[in-house]
Length: 191
Image (tube, rainbow, N blue to C red; front, side, top):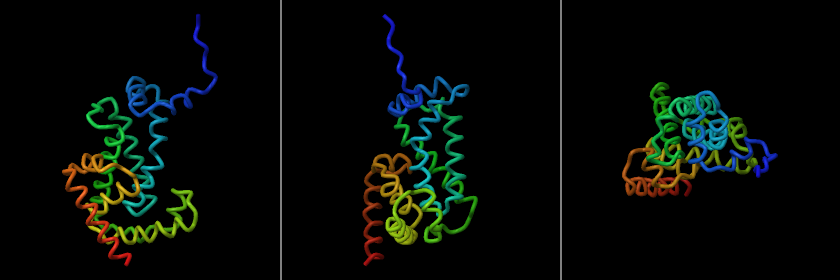
């Protein structure tokens, strides 16, 4: 007997699959069929934009970096070995692209300069959350680059310590220690 055909669109059925399943499908489909890749990128586009906007300090810069990340994933997915999770691999690419972008800019990162329009464009939070985010960014802007990266990945991207350690190629205990020290510095600024 034939199996009943689902009436739900293929995109909706793919969106229910986990990252590992989508990666496997996309690897078989690319470069000719991009549906699984598109579903995977849609899943991570907003979190990457929020993370990169806060990290780079500009919506425009974040858009450029995220676009480059998506291109690198498109071309590199067939070589993804699965030694880490897709999410970790993706954020590692985003981290490397952000570092490269900052080196090209060769100016100091000033998260306090992120405009209100940039936040409103990336998040649909209330005005109160927006103001709190701007204050947080000013405080984070006082941190060194590595500490800032760890705080953004933990607090904004909500990555696990282990994922951050893999992305930044650091020892797990060093990431935890630096995060705690950064929080202490932020607490001092707040008080």
